[in-house]
Image 1 (cartoon, rainbow, N blue to C red):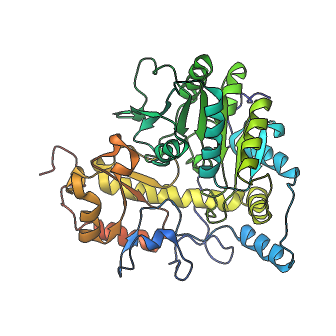
Image 2 (cartoon, one colour; image 1 turned 120 degrees about the horizontal axis):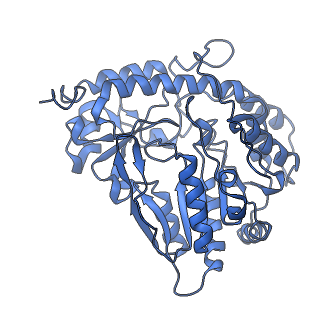
Length: 413
């Protein structure tokens, strides 16, 4: 099936409701006693606010919590087959949220997170190519998992520097290197929250098809695209003749704050690749379905829309407060998700040790830009998916930095 030409309806930019309906994104929300990886990054230091790892310090959808309670009440937790209705549910989600048509036959419902899915998908890339092995291509700065997974798979890779301009990041002009085994893309961009234009995604899919490479679009932040912007789903944005060389990966994990229950889906238009992918998954002891995975995924997709609309309104308000205050320190204004990509020097921090300096001066833990490849040196990534009360504290602490950071470049000392 092809994408419908009409633009998606998109979520409305309305104030986030709070109170008894469960959509309270303002009050303090403790994760104490939950074994949170994000909070473990503070090392137990009192008063530190973790803003490094990409998950939310916000209460998730009530529908997901209720679905887990109902399933837990049935005290049989044995092997579970894949519910084929889940494929249509994913297709319905894309139609409602993004205004595109996804063929349910393309959908693989995976009992693992997107990172694991990508690692196993790289096995099929290896089988596509001869020797010497062509490299996998991806941009820099970019989510560091791409490099880690290529190394784990024994695949060579090449990082392509992005260009930063007034409108955000863009790919370098000119042809990509050939040959290539695959092109990996986080869409929207991680770490900057850039939403890639549909023309760019379509052109990249065409280049991959012409080169015999596979375009893998990691779209785990795609459902968090802010109102006023449109996320381009790679498999439906690509021309029909190029789709056999495109795979989209997605998950409810980032969108609905449930990454601790790993699940994902892959949109794979090419039947032969679907077969090879499922065969590779089986080699790792993974099959479609999963008990808790399906419980969470179906509850989120069926009932989580109103919660997500409220969340997006909260994130947009938080984004505006931070970008207005930080001014030229923001390398690229986020248009999706909850990640802020900052110039350490513009914050008055030493680029080589900015993460430690921000921790010591402000009690804010962040991700060091070097984790995102050569293009990330001298940058910091902050996660602003925080309750409104915590965001107030963050903004107050940032005032401890060089008082010139919030001024236009001509007035900064």
